[in-house]
Image (cartoon, rainbow over all chains, first blue to last red; front, top):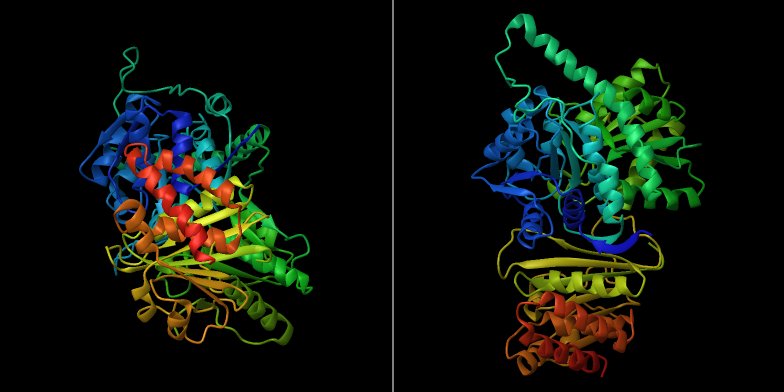
Length: 393
Length: 191
């Protein structure tokens, strides 16, 4: 029997961490992810888990310590947001290229400046090319479920890549909502114990980690990382299937909401997807054929699958919660359009930017987007190929 | 969001409006409802105006935006009436509850012509009587439960007893005072 609870997104991640009882957590606090290490250190001081908590003096050190612990053979995690992750930048690449499957609980927050503590995806989107797996959540339930699946994906022998489990700062991290928790013993059995093949504290097989790679070797390591990313796709689906057996909740690369016969679709990531679903139900009641494709897995990018799921629509709006500053849209829009082009889809695609620095996104704005798509297709109205939603008038 | 009660809290940083919203989510959850309780953060500092929100529904809640047309508004600090448009979007079939020693007749002219129900509660006075300190959020929480009818008084008090035992595990001496504040406020507000 699932356990009916109400928790904030940060509490939900902390609960998953408690159930998994990882070996090591180095952390440095930053809003809005600070509560996660706070909760975990409370569990430790209460004797509920025996994770080794390492307080450090910066995020650069947090990720460095996490890399060291994971390399030693420990199941490791840390948590951060925004500028905290920016300070981890160099180490993000080190973790990925050394194939260390540690987990990062990322609570998405805008990057400076102007300084802002609220949600957008500029932190994790900036790290999209670091070689980390990235999985996003709409609400507290999804971030909890994603965290429970995290190590099964990252530690898989065909993958061995670090994983970022992302949720929207404040919007889900600090919102108390209903949630269904899974019993401790089921979570423990699902996640299993960590048995690394190669690790520094193995006296039977001494090894070096992170040596210099000359030009004749460097490129092959990148190829290897990319192969692992490709492999991750099947692993993510397999783990999701097993997870469904213990939870009853179904996950894939993305969620399709009322897409079967949709003529107009929104593609987006995160908490705003729930708001869009509400708008879709209202528009469907008026006979509008509208749907949503909500991205769960952004790295590896399931581009072919996304393009196929969108190919039957007349037009799609791709909504980014981060600026790409390519003067043409955000990263999600660029990647979705690339794959639509590859399959020669006869679907118009428009880029939108929304929700930067915590700017609210409402059902009315979702409806406006669908109305623009319909107007473009049925009346031939020219609409900008790249727009901001919800700007001050 | 049909069949969903939407509530907006106005307070000042440090007065516990966010805590009250989270407690309301907790007690409504215990009645079997789907709930949301969330703060809207501006610059975090003591005394700055802050907003918090609740949605309470019989169905799962998917919307993650702020609340623009609430059924209920709670004003935890009367001085906000001059600083914030507290009745913005407030439905006329709803109600506003204000922490003030003033009467409904005295306070109504400050509400931008709002035509719905107006309740006042001297939460400061209740808090001083029961706790000896000004913590207006407990009385205001009781007030919104009484006015909205999301749950019965007895169930609410029983749940809050448990909540406070958890919340004040390290200072149990304040539990009784808070419970008295809830009881007094529950009756006073609808007088």
